Image (cartoon, rainbow, N blue to C red; front, side, top):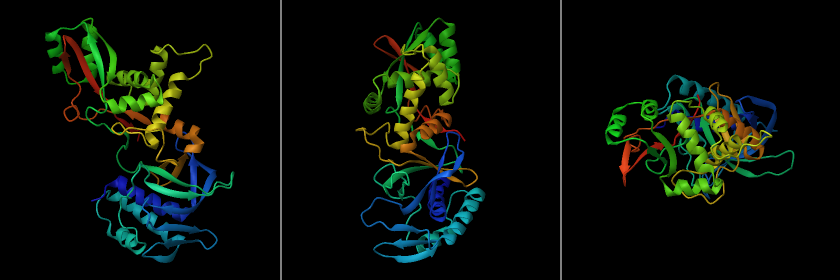
Length: 353
């Protein structure tokens, strides 16, 4: 049974075919009405025998062509189906939406969730009017119609960061572990004269992926996480501001270059386009087109990889740290190892509603 996010992918598919344009957005989810790319074709997966949904703007129609189908449908039909699905998602949410499923069968669109071997949820051939090129690009789709979607999913020890605790004893460790809130834990460590410092990323894969991005990236992300878990803000932009003031890597310049903000934007961009916490990254992006966002009002806007300034600003201004289940991901309690004390904090980042 599909959820709101999965139905949002189908909605975006219908809406893009109906519009025939991929509109760009600024760093605050506003659409540029005069900045868009004409859509030539859309594919919902990367299989060799996939169907092509070709936009014929002059005829205001969509040609659906594949091994099992060859039909032409008015763009207006996709507009109506998109509007109906949007209303259904808002009223009912997930489930089996039979009217939409009937239309999907009519156009040989076999499943709600697109099948893909990479991080791209949809593949689009656009016409870049500036260069004349017509590339096929993969896009990741995020929806604001449902709950806050994740940019970086927690994955047990793969996404844990280890901090060393100094200046406490066993009795204090037991008291700290009895406290419910992370802010309480760290406040108490301060009260008894203790301190903490980043040790390492627990998972080797994430550690290596962050090193691929920058030798200091793990330390920068850990510093932002520390600000979050000690109660100094959840928005990525806010934690980054505080880390900039602290300057743990001693990289701030007299000219005020945005060292930490730039690094965090690269970090967010990499995870938006293909990096994960559990799979080795070799430097290539799978969602090489960028990011498509379904807004609460049903508008669909895009942040292109080649318009990366807007994409980076959107990610930086619209994400926050989040706390996953401490029991499922085995973090949050201080533990002792070789007479030293440590605590694991888990990395998870969501989009701000």
